[in-house]
Image (cartoon, one colour):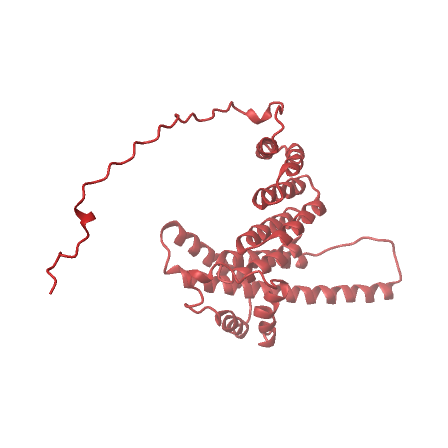
Length: 312
């Protein structure tokens, strides 16, 4: 029988080893930069330093709303970005897109968002890109384009109440625009042909108004359901914002005046996937990038609303 402790290694009882003496290090001297140091003439051949200088110049000019100057600096900066530095490249392309937007060049801005879309590799990248694209459409007053991108945001983040609220408000704004009377003066033409043409236009407008009206009702109901579901987890100014948004949704639905049966059927469809397990935090990062398109929104909610035979 072994006595407790008789099998300990002798090294346990050896004296402590001496610690090696610390290696002497030279003191750290922080680099000091003059105010607006990046505005000076470039006297370096280092591509990384050139990239930093042009990036600072561009950001500074953008902040001062010198968008053409910022665009020129961003364009110069991108020439010195290594192929593997996708983060800086994405940042520069986003800055260029915003500059083109402020300069009134819509096509150039949207062409850069297409490049960014091809480079998106995760949910965060795509979310930032969709935000940028929405802002471009909003800047140029393109409500239809804005609604299309917001639908993609709602597909990517199906439990994000503010995306649904923004989509609902955009649909309401488009509905009000379509409902406004328009007068198109022109030379006198054949009254009968003119009447047929006017009737077709009015019929098409009515169909679009009904479509947008139903989508506005659907999105306001969805945002109100989400706000009520998350209300119990909120406090302070966050809760106040949610309560304010709920009142706005209620007022909008009163303005839209859906029938009680319509409201009930919409609520049933929009409530189906609001299950606590699916709405946990680990599900709030989006549904993934694979195959995300406008059809996701159509198939997941819109077509089911239509199949429910909702009365307009």
